[in-house]
Image (cartoon, rainbow, N blue to C red):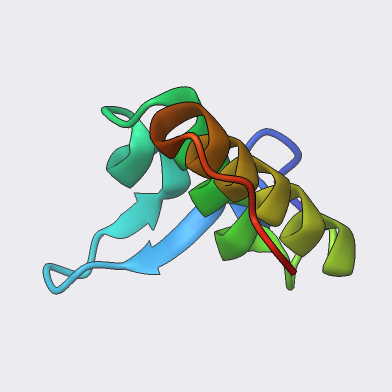
Length: 74
């Protein structure tokens, strides 16, 4: 049975104590762009595949531009 309110792609894994970690547990204190990049990276295999990696890259590029004034050169 699938849990629609807590799908697997929102779950990050388990800590040393055995507690299931939610993505929220380790991004809640981060600024939105950093939290979003981590969110997309951690769930790409379970949800959005390549699209989630591209979204993460978009957020990382925005951080590079906004915080460091640099454009990402591919």
